[in-house]
Amino acid sequence: MIIMTQSITGRNTPVLIASTVETILLMGAFIAGTATMLNAQFPINQTWLAALLSSHLSLGLLSGLGAVLLFTLSYLSDRKDLFRLSLVTVIFVAIAAAGGLAFYATYNYAFSYVMALSLLISIISSCGCIVYSL
Image (cartoon, rainbow, N blue to C red; front, side):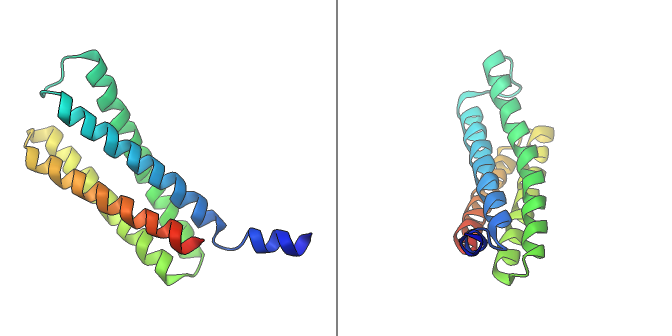
């Protein structure tokens, strides 16, 4: 029984869990942001759109914290492939955050596209962490 438990819970299990949660958070942030952009005129003056934007911001903040956690866990796992993928995830989550802040400050839609593209790249790299940690 102990041997079977050790084979199931390996060194990459924390990375697998963190990357799965990170992917879910990133997808939620992407969907909420896309729904906000498709339905809103800025500045927002409707309550349900404000709630949707608030969920996008909350999921974005949580995905930033999750990306840092994923990066730390992949560093501790001593696997270069997981480390590189989590590094890409952290970098593109940071770029998405910068694009979102720039969009909020200027209402320039080019920053919205930067944010969306960065979120897509970070979703792909966090999915890569899931695959490589299996």
